[in-house]
Each structure stands twice: as structure tokens, then as C-alpha cells.
Length: 217
Image (cartoon, rainbow, N blue to C red; front, side):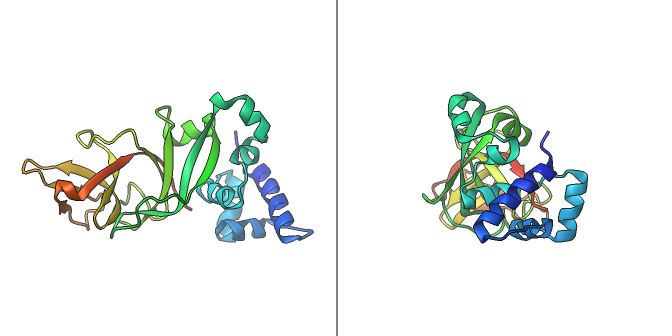
């Protein structure tokens, strides 16, 4: 079991080295993670780990998430590669739940994640995944704004139910996707305030199916 109190102490060490500060407090960790101090205090008390914010911090600072969560060094990862997974996290890419967002590029960070943590987030299926952010509210309540979603690019059959990342002529979307009898493609929001969008088949390319997510605070 991951103990947030232990993770916080390691984060304090990292922040102290980065800022050359002799003393780092919980409020400093909260600030770095972008979490309100009162919320962070409650999360610590309840041992509610803010995985999304911590993984983003690991990616930006090039820190091993496994060291932070499980005290496992990089050489341990090399010795037991079958127990760990690397995910390409595109921190600058947004899969829009509203208007179109940017398409995938080559700017990504590799996040190494223990299989226990991985399966707790996405289940026990394919773990050859990529991670991007959700922007907008049209997929609520299924996916919140600023969630991190895990995408299995091997799954692109829209005849199977699910939520997909669709690359279109107007940007990158996270939607339910359905092909109508007339051949047109519908991009469907879970938020009933948004209408389905219609596109021609040549305007849509399925990047992959969303298989898991981490919600924000």
C-alpha cells in the first residue's frame, strides 16, 4: 500500500535539493503539486494519493515514479523489467472534450510504473499505453477536465463500445465514436449539454481507445 506521508517526505527531499532550501514543509509540496493546502492536508489525513499531480511532477523533474512510490531504484527496474511498464506521457498534448486540440507530437516524457500501480489504474489488459490530458467538460461525468487518460493505440475498432481518442481535421478529441448507416462519423459527448458532431470518414482517424484515467483533485 502506498502511504502518502512517505511519498511526501521524498518529495520534500527533491524540492529541497532543487531550491537549496534547508527546510521544506507540507505546504511547499502542495504548492509544487498545484493542490490547495487545505485539500492536501485532508488528502494526507485520509491517505488519498494525488497520482495525477505526482506523476506530472515526476515527468517534469525526470524522477522515477517507482522510486517515489515503492523505493525501487533504476537498476532494480532493469533487473525486473517484466514487472514494470513505461508509458509515454505527452504532458503538452490535450485531447479536447470540447473544441479541437493539438495532435500528438514527439515531445513526451517516459514514466516508469510498477505493474501493481498500473493495474490499479487501468486494469490487467494491454499495458503498451500512452498518456495525455483531457481538456474541457463535454465528457463529464465520465472524464473531468484536466484528467490524465491512458490510451491503448492497439484498440481502434469503433464498433466496440468505449471512449476513443480521435484525430480530426480540426484537432484531437476524446469522444464516443459511432459510424452511422450513411457512413458519417459521429463524435458523441457524455455531457448531455453537448450535441454530437458529424464528420466524413476521411476527416477522422482513431488514435486508440481510452482504457483508464487518473482524476484531478
